[in-house]
Image (cartoon, rainbow, N blue to C red; front, side, top):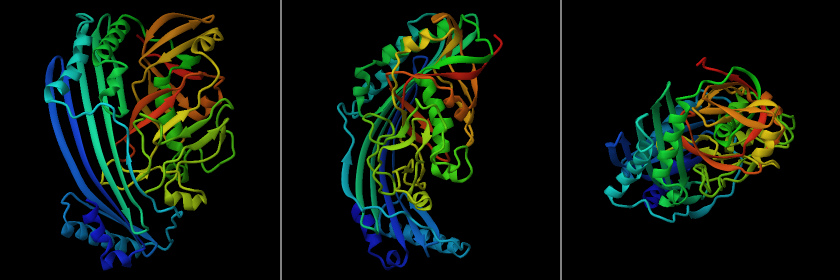
Amino acid sequence: MFEIMEKSLQTNLARQVDLVQIRGQNRIITTCIVKNGAVEQFSSASLGGVSIRVLVDKKSWGFSSTNVCDVDNVEKTLENAAKLGKAASSLKKQEIELEPVKAVVAEVEAPVKNSVGIAAEDIVDIPSEAYKGAQEVGPEVKDVKATYIAVEDEKYFLSSEGARITQSTTRVMLYVDVIAKGAVICPASETLAHTGGLELFDRVTPYELGKKVAEKAVNLSHVKAPPPGMFNVIIDPKLCATLLHEAIGHPLEADLAMAGGGFGSQVGETFSSELVTIYDDGHVPGGLGYFVYDDEGVFCDRTILIENGILKSFMHDRESAALADVHPTGNAHAWDYSVEPLIRQTNIGIEAGDYTVEEMIENIKDGLLLEGTFGGQADSNADFTFGFQSAQKIENGVLTEEFRGANVAGNAIEVFKTIDAVSKEAVLRPGACGKYQFAVQGRVVPAIRCTIMVGGTGG
């Protein structure tokens, strides 16, 4: 593919614009969904194409893409991008500045121990085993859906600045969703996923995952919802991952911050407890957000965002970095070739603390342990509402009554200022994001102890 891409760089048109960035991609997505024992979907889809982004008159970007990867069509894509950029530049007065970066020439391949290239019947076995594990829990299990997805990517980046980068990654995901009916109807879900191959299931088998989720759903279908109110809580890593990504991570993306988000541009101000250090790191082994270079050819460095509660940096692309007079952090990413890069998280994390979870529980007189996540929403001001899957009452340092899931709500900045304990173990969790386009990402998260508003569901 590089040969076709390079020919566009050699044209007169490429020399007439300020910058040319060409991205190529070949992707294979294998999906197998088993619902209640039957194969609902089995597909292997190939996606490939080239996109070109050009900077025209130092004022405007032009972008175009094609899924027909021959010399003529790629050169036509360059022409379209240049025309769009030229048309937009006539409407703009302010020039676009890009922070300079080293032009990298590199080939990168994420480690894969066990290939995803297996026989069709072996692929079907993966979600089928998850179904078997769930179904064997008993008759109260009413609905089981297991989804296996493998994404194999070859990405190419070429720029008129001299960058030439190839990156190969494989990602494997297994989602299990169960609905049980006891005293009430109750769902439960869990995900296994990483950047790598089928060695994902060396730690937890699909059967074990299915059984675990079903047992959770059945158990929760026989308990009531938690009481509402403001509580001292321990938030487990699964719920912490959602809270961190949505309510803290997004406001730390420079494009949202510069648009007037909750963190503004107040580097040096305190936004969390001094026990909290937050980072973004594309190099976390196995993380779904594993990247060595972003889609602008920038090295995906480890970026300290909040250190001991103090805001240190935002996640940047080259354009926002120039505006802030800092180095880009390698956070410009596009889900596929057909869309432009956006500032996205890779593997966002909270550094581990000094407590065991047992020690964190011991110091709570009246509170809750909140576990699991059912998603939710947050805005750029860090206001959020999220669902959790289950809870346990903490009375005088002891876990007592179990509850099914409900919701938490508040402002993440205010909640993070109440954190008074962070667990010793930080867990790598999978995640996804829908900021204008889809993305898979990682979260490295401990359990945290804080004060938060819990909303019961009245059951």
